[in-house]
Length: 258
Ligand code: 13P
Image 1 (cartoon, rainbow, N blue to C red):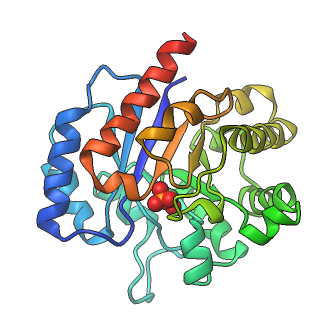
Image 2 (image 1 turned 180 degrees about the vertical axis):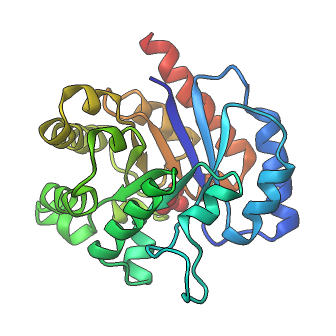
């Protein structure tokens, strides 16, 4: 199975800088690599970047979020179908910053996931506990609750278009990474949850990414874990050199296990 390394640029860069970053990433990603690279720039740049991007079958584009509603009178919103119509392949759903800073409820996250799948996008569903939940030992319960809500009613066939991203909130943008063991333990629990609900084959085929202060110096160790299938990268995705080094670490980890 191929890994995924996705760069979430969050609310960073102006158009000229975004274009420069895209060009540098495209230059560095081999078409023959073992990793699917996904770029999630700010929404205003997506359409232009998708059109300007050179051909590279290893790289595709993602939205950082989408509306949970269909087209209509929802000022400021953009639908999953709109993203699909400009050549975007996937969308982040339920990122903790959306949940915490913009009040996305479990119900909203589930609506957005449904909308993404119905529009033909791959949904990259984010989950993860906060520091208090981790310290009180409630992290597994929290993550499984998030998955249960968001994935309720998703069919076996639809699970082919779901990627999961475990992003412990205490590790996002803090420089504090989950240890390789902590990541593996949670990824394993997530895979077990998928197995219980959709069976072994789907569990085995679902890619589970780690996110949270992932950088060139720690990516190799994290990607070497058996249940980690790549990463969702924030800060380090804003530098082409760092991001490409993480893509290399992913390729390397796959070569070592084949
Ligand atoms: P950082 O890599 O900056 O910690 O961000 C992770 C993240 O939130 C990716 O979606």
